[in-house]
Length: 166
Image (tube, rainbow, N blue to C red; front, side, top):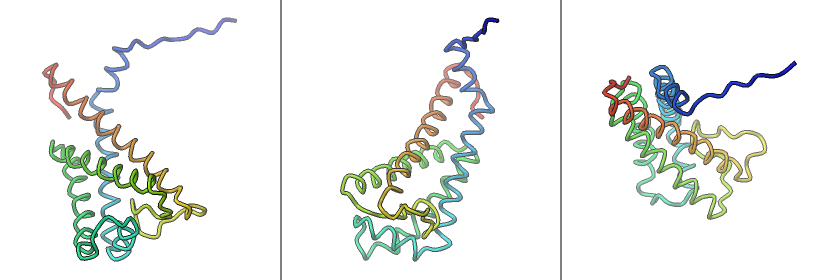
């Protein structure tokens, strides 16, 4: 009995990756992450401010402003992305790059922050008070960035083919 393998050509794989349902699913997932992350931080702005303070990069006088504004921007970016606004994708991508830079700084500096501040303050999995949550968050943010880049690729490729983006 022989096993038959199916080889998918790169062009068919590209066509699948750029199909409207796939692009919509990626957009929906990214939007949901940003809306949920921002909303959970808004629920406990003080707790989020304490986490931001642990990174040591925001002056204490600006801490309340940053702790309120950043989650608001996350929610707005997620809603705009969900609504299919191009600036929503740009804002989600910019926020993701910012978060990667902050997490990269924290990892490089050897900070031991148990709660990265990505979602609800105090949401620390057991055994992650050694800073390993930062590395996991960095990897997760790389995946979010890949999703953003996938949406950009889909929009530009579909535009070149004169196909409207979803």
